[in-house]
Amino acid sequence: MKRYSAFAIVREAFRQHTGWPRAWASPEPRERYDVIIVGAGGHGLATAYYLGRNFGITNVAVLEKGWLGGGNTGRNTTIIRSNYLQDASAAIYEKARSLYETLSQELNFNLMFSPRGVMMLAQTEHEVRGYRRTAEANALQGVETEFIGRERVKELCPIINIEGPRYPVLGALWQPRGGTARHDAVAWGYARACSDMGMHIIQRCEVTGIRTEGGRVTGVSTTRGDIGCNKLGIVVAGHSGVLAQMAGFRLPIESVALQAMVSEPVKPCMDVVVMANTVHGYMSQSDKGEMVIGGGADGFNNYTQRGSFHHIEETVRALCETFPIISRLKMLRQWGGIVDMTGDRSPIISKTPVENIFINCGWGTGGFKAIPGSGWAMAELMVKGESPLAAEFGLNRFREGRFIDESVAAGVAH
Amino acid sequence: MLILHCPYCGVMADETELAPGGEAHLRRAGPESSDEEFMAYLFERENPRGVHFERWRHALGCGKWFHAARDTATLEVFGTYPAQVTEPPEALLETIREKRPGWQWRDLK
Ligand SMILES: Cc1cc2nc3c(=O)[nH]c(=O)nc-3n(C[C@H](O)[C@H](O)[C@H](O)COP(=O)(O)OP(=O)(O)OC[C@H]3O[C@@H](n4cnc5c(N)ncnc54)[C@H](O)[C@@H]3O)c2cc1C
Ligand SMILES: [Zn+2]
Image 1 (cartoon, protein in one colour):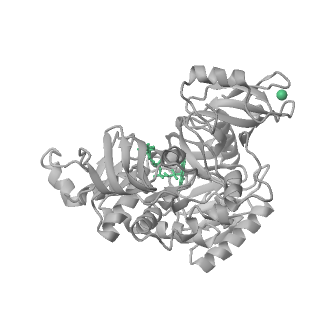
Image 2 (cartoon, rainbow over the protein chains, first blue to last red):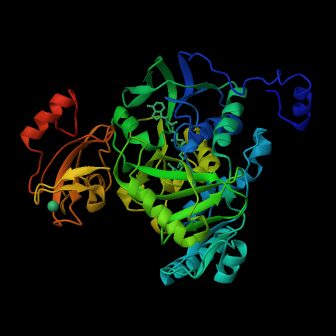
Image 3 (spheres, rainbow over the protein chains, first blue to last red):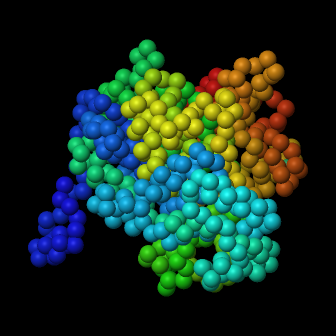
């Protein structure tokens, strides 16, 4: 791999940029791999990366039906934070957040990680109590977060209207080292590093069937032929149910559309991420100057990557109330992604009823922030059969009633 | 926008009038059921990419619950039917067979 550096930019400037190599190879699939990962989103690529980095397993293929990062990873609003309520969640989300801090250097790829601070507004007494409780829990978990008063909210983000007509701002949960990162870059950076280790990233290769023998996986059928494997990792977010059906089991998952949009670019006007869970909307400003906006998910199953219009209307209404300054902004683009929702709003990183098939899904509306930690845990689970970070996130929790209830902490979809 | 015909009041109801109620025809697990059966009843879902049967409520209309058959991959609506049944009417199944040869949902084909 040719390293990216300031020196490389200067060197290429002198030869019309003819020396940049392709960031990752596009190989033909082999007949067989030690490990196949289905889905080249952030979680699938991170799983492959940590299989190589932490365990030296590099005879790995990542199969992707569309293009790399074209699923939710390339459609999300990139909020990164780790101030969840339950211990198991705080552990894996904080692992991910801390890995993000140095990931650009590690991958030699600029992920534009920007720990600008994330603020979750408290606009009802109930939310104030809930966030105070989260702040106390986070103190015990070693996650840096703080409950701040309304004056401090206004100081950190002057464009907020804290005297809102329906829900005045009463305070906020503030994580100063939360923030954003460039979503595509996370997929590209991992892909480049995987390819460099000799792994195969095979795009436009849809898995259409899963082959098993005596309750154990032997390989997959794809649009580019049959491919054998010893172990299979299913990491396909909204399509998890479809893959589980191929393998012959069911999941506690429902797939629904979640939407986001960006405005025309404007001058810098906010340098933190703000989430307003009561009125249901959130916003940050991208480096290009666009306001990045997200809101609620639909309530019915949908695989079309197209959401309902009234959700956009609700989100915009909520944000105009919170940030009156944006009321005349023009929106540039709007899109949807298919998110995989579990009953307790926590992910699944688990063995499955089929031997040597592992599944990583259920990240729903908030899995971008978890990509490095999730890949770390999934790789460990696939190699050792268990991982401390993933222990609580098994499928068996639904049978045993050990839910990791984050429906309150997750609040608004993000 | 999703538009469903309410089989009770006859209105073609916009999505904003309706409340989604999740997967249809779930059979409740009784007191003597196993942990697996309870898990399946409470959490596991078909979540199909294609033909699906759901419960909806005409929340801002007549207030009644009813059933709908939709395609989750195209958003096409095949039809709606009343709530007091344990499986979809034969005429509706016939329509779906015509439009989606080879479809399957649980034991229905
Ligand atoms: C609008 C929106 C906003 C969001 N905002 C945030 C946020 O601010 N912060 C945050 O932390 N999270 C956010 N999320 C959630 C986050 O995007 C996801 O949890 C995360 O990206 C999931 O990553 P993944 O790798 O699991 O899935 P994906 O990125 O969806 O990757 C799965 C891949 O599997 C492929 N695939 C599917 N079926 C097959 C098959 N049969 N064969 C081969 N490949 C297949 C798909 O094409 C896809 O590329 C948001 C999501 C959306 C939709
Ligand atoms: Zn009605």
